[in-house]
Length: 242
Image (cartoon, rainbow, N blue to C red; front, side, top):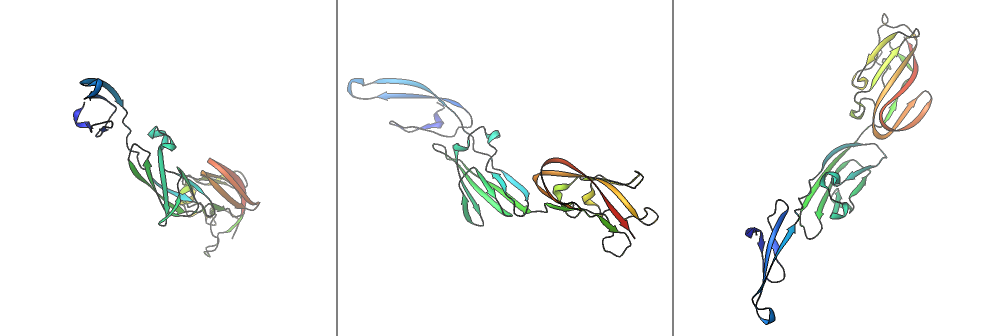
């Protein structure tokens, strides 16, 4: 019992239709021989293993970078990677059979996840990767003369969604704050009118909101490569000419 969950006769029976852990009562009757009319009743605990929940992921990937795609959220499932088999496909080609696949290109990835015997659950996790800007360039001079060429102090690449919330503070030579933004990548930069800022040297504190991915920064000092999460603060200066 429950009677509608158990079917079969002989040495093997099938328990089907479970939605939770259940105790099934099995009655074994023997006919013929020395054990004729012998009957044994046994309670069997049957653990219900729910189907795995698929993962739907959308992420950004840097050029020439790699991103690990994980087939399932194993912590939430409470099971092990070895409880499943995997078949990863990319551009209609099978590309992997492990729980984790290292993607190196933008595009659509799919993994068919199947539970090992005796369970027959399957699910499909899907991942869409889009190539993104992972390199920032900070200028060391701007010419705010309205000729549509280098008119504003702007950090190339900071407009990527991965840097949302990046901040900047710009000061003049006397330490007075002349410009501030709490989401600098979503602005058109700092392009002051002549009566707002004179020619000369200005100083900035740039706070880059990082994700856990490689970040390449180009500035007057050359190129640096950074890795980590959270804000990275860069202090520097640039020259304003008219």
